[in-house]
Image 1 (spheres, chains in turn green, brown):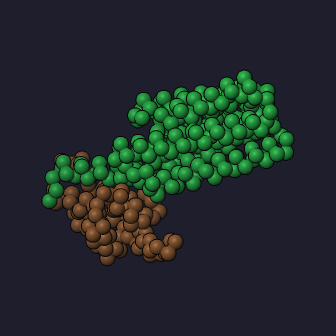
Image 2 (cartoon, each protein chain N blue to C red):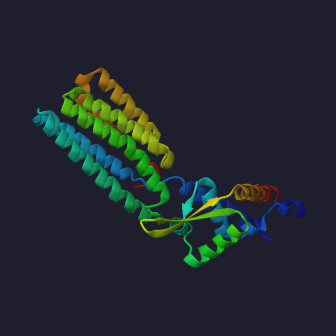
Length: 190
Length: 98
């Protein structure tokens, strides 16, 4: 027959397995800070030097690639440090749920660029990015949900006031990411 | 005391089997390799526990090929879910009562 410390241990192990097999918890907070900084640097560059739309789109693409690359490698590192696996059924589910709305938003942004609806590019991408985060939040840290809501609010605001697009960019992709990253860094470590 | 342990199911007495059932009750299905990583056990160990659970009708096995590689995935059966949740309740009662 089992004694109680053993039973307690069993229940703890069960809880941990249930949580870890349904949520990807290795998302790096530091990568949020880096993504935010890259977005702010891009916004500064755009504000100071760039006035044609396609160079602007190029800067945005570079910022996106830098952010995703750091998010990927820092999360792998975090998973290793926590002795967890990075590539699991739940991380695949999270990525799928993130990238469907994100890719839709990206495609829409490119279509708007081509069609000349320039003022819709930033707000639409902010909104779809927010929806992507909310969609992915079921499979990772729950806090992402609130980040998603704030991205959508920022996107709607920029839709309403198109002249504020650069502020929307800096706020949505820069400030929000840095604040979120620092909060997660404090709560869950690097 | 005897009442307390009557609901504990013998089949779930190993830590590995508890782990398997925990993962399978919260996921639709899970493949062999991912299960192995999640539980940090060896192939042989996992396979024998899976076989035992399958024999009791607690889990269902589905074999298929993905990119020509064999892939076995497991899911909890209705019976397995019910038995496991009863077992967990019994464990919790055991802690509460002692």
